Length: 249
Image 1 (cartoon, rainbow, N blue to C red):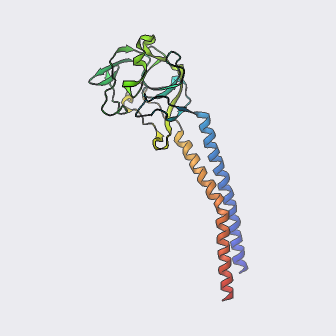
Image 2 (spheres, helix red, strand yellow; image 1 turned 90 degrees about the horizontal axis):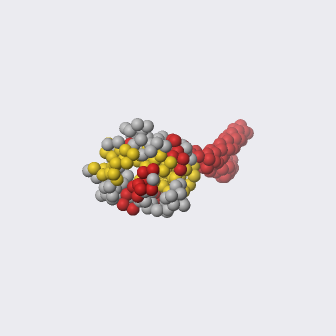
């Protein structure tokens, strides 16, 4: 009986050590994931429905802090342009310096004469409600359109403002990786494959998935480790009662 007791005590000590390790590692992953996210990402609330159905009015998005030089065609970006308004805005990049933008032949946007597949547009709509004459994007600038083309005050609405309706790359504050709220819309933005074969290709998504995984795994480890003590005590009491009953018999 004493050997059984010593074995149980040894298992109990090992379990306590493993429980402590799990809680400590879980805290590191959980807190580290949040801190990492806070350093690399900035939340924004989208003020209008100009990016519907990709992003709705009032949705909360997570934008990775990137330099404007990292932006590629197809990226959804947060930017500030004083001549467009006082608030940060969210639009999709469809052209970069040197590109020739036009719309619409066969209902499709063209970039450098190539028709662009845009599955993110609202069902049953064309690429734009109004035509865009062939427009060259100045170097160091971006041509931006909303996914809801009929109601978006974007580059197509600012063609006469100077610089062909474009904004400078340094106006970009972040690249949107995901919709964070509402929960039923939570998820990463899909990559815009229509721009994949163009020079420069697509940008790589940020480490948001890895951060979320770290937070979730950390939470599981903390809860699992914290639950070990009460569970072990309950199991220990059950074994003690069983041993006492066996001795009495």
